[in-house]
Image 1 (tube, rainbow, N blue to C red):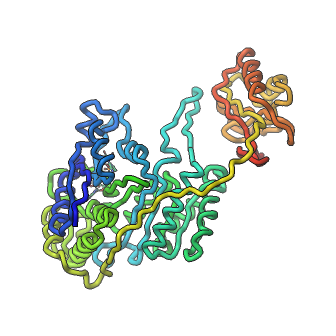
Image 2 (image 1 turned 45 degrees about the vertical axis):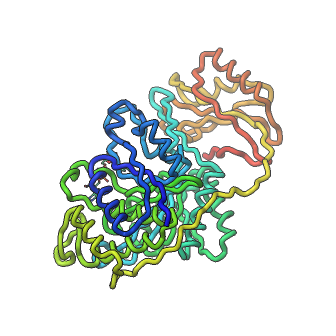
Image 3 (image 1 turned 180 degrees about the vertical axis):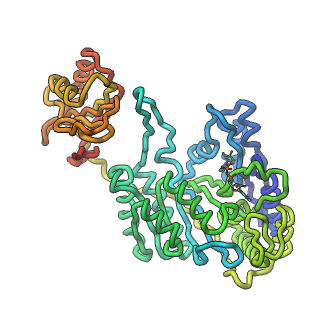
Length: 478
Ligand code: NAD
């Protein structure tokens, strides 16, 4: 078998110890790897690299396209960008795959039959880092969900389910509140799901879905969700399956992929030969499938399962009466190496084929007719009541562009607001045409100039568009 080039980073904290343990096991199992090492993390940040990654590291990553990464420590204080977010976005790693499996009765868990894979959208949502302070009182973070981004990760989830023999894909969203952003994710789930009639589909509102996942995870199989929910839910899933120390994850893109443990660098454990290397090892098992060495992946995974069922445990999963021997990181790795070639007897053994190469083929879509209908102008204003602001703004018009409604934190306060509604200094003033009409951009500029000339602080505008006649903005209720 020819060797596959991969990029490896040892990271910070417990990173070097668990990476060492992992690579020793892979080597002993016969993995054919040509390893390029790069430096990432704290040292790079403290040398002044704002992303925690040397410029030269990109050459290696773009050459090998496969990254096995140990956790890093993000230094406290401002000005440092998240290394993970940078890598995911720069390399287009749109799907984060996190299996959470119970190893009962060998690892304590309240959920013996749990075997869930969370597929988290990895590039969008509130993680764009587009945040603004707009007024004295109000701070904003922009949530961006795209149609192609949703389509890609949802198709990945269905393809993953099909190739790994999974029966059901569940979607978690909050589209009862976020009708447009989570709404498009849900719509893509319904649309793409139709192409997979062999797979059962269901959608849960994320709050009750999360409660169900925490209470009866065995009811779920594959779950796909937007970035923030996936971030939170996958940690919960890893923890309730037994330990965050056991979770591995794959970050998959069309060209590159990154494999890492779910947990962080655990600084208090560093250098003590205590950390459980299993999260990184199970991530490496996913990597071996990805690079076409599925037999080695299975050999490593089965030896690991046998070690776990033989009761050889690191401190985090060690339990009196269940475990047989408490070991350190190095000894755990040696125990796995000793069991290479063996199969577990009580836990189900694994067998792998090469992971399918999934390319996000986006569906051809007809461009919709986009028409300008109005504008939301946001004001920083603290001079009186909603009624007074509304009355004052009624006089500003630009052709058919007229004030229709004012909201404060999304609650309608004019016309016909309630005096009880608490108002901040942040007012969203909606101006638009009559139904069936459209406006031109110059009318917005005209209106904006009138407001500024009258002394209003316009902090932002957001155009209101119709797409094939359908509003591309949330309605105001109340
Ligand atoms: P953490 O995951 O490092 O630790 C959380 C808890 O889990 C701690 O009690 C720790 O001792 C335990 N733990 C973690 N890994 C373990 C292992 N392999 N074996 C046994 N116990 C383990 O999270 P944290 O303490 O919030 O963060 C520490 C640092 O890690 C921070 O600087 C954070 O930014 C960073 N971090 C990095 C990544 C990454 O590089 N992917 C992810 C998360 C956090």
